[in-house]
Length: 391
Image (cartoon, rainbow, N blue to C red):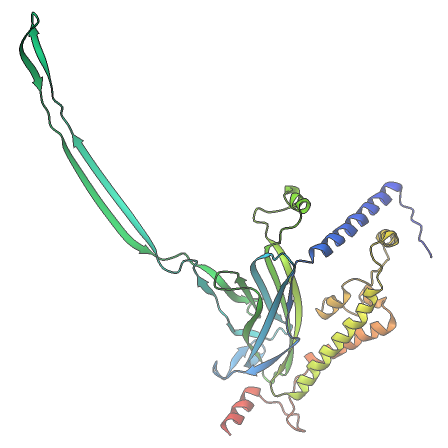
């Protein structure tokens, strides 16, 4: 085994070792915390269904377009023996193409209250006044003999005024579902809260109507979701560390409980070539992830030799970790396979698969003209569907 020698002084080596130990410890702690997790799932493909009730023409930056509706079915699974307290989901959906525009979406912003009926308010104003007198009597004696009596008497007078007002007040409302556009109208966001009438577990359906260029065939959607809430209670030691203010713990203890990012291949309804291109893209991605997972499975477990290699990689400025998240970066279009330092050092068969995925993605995104039979004439999918319906 070849070990690279470093000319760093001893304090620097100790600091690097401390960083490696802390990183290893945090990884072990994170893997232990993952036993209580929230996982999300979203189908990799979606069908763009033409919509005709929003108008025949949609004005886009590139000209006149058409409208299509896309349905996304997001599922979540809460696992672990101790369930966390989920407070809200935050979902973002942005198309890769800059020519798409959000026309409509569902669900829209919805409000609700924890109270089932209006709140009754009763105000009472009471005023009272009183006036009183007293009387007494005492015997009068002269030389021990009773000669008479003296005294006085009094009376009381009181007044009381009572005024009562009762009315109903609207119960306070809060947003159960908030929705709106982002990225200057290109994308959409949703914020869902866990309430007594809404449970954030299982499947949720979101429908988005996009204005797309005329002759639309295919496109990609970037969908991200994050769940925020209070983690499940751990052991006494972890609870004690969570109370230390220096760790940045807030008063409400709200933390990300789970998050995911998806790429959805959207193809036009009734376009077999676009559907086939979407399936090819998904199959290529699955094959790429399966082969990359084999490299991840060869990564040694946490041991002394792993720690030594980790320290050596920290000291070597030219080292590249091929066990990193390069697949996610490539799929999310955050890495160029021709210039990325990690992808360029992958084994040749795996690097070829990465290039094949980029080719399949480019072919899917660049489908511009629909085909009917053996002809390659451009047409509007909305007009074609309306014509079929009239016949």
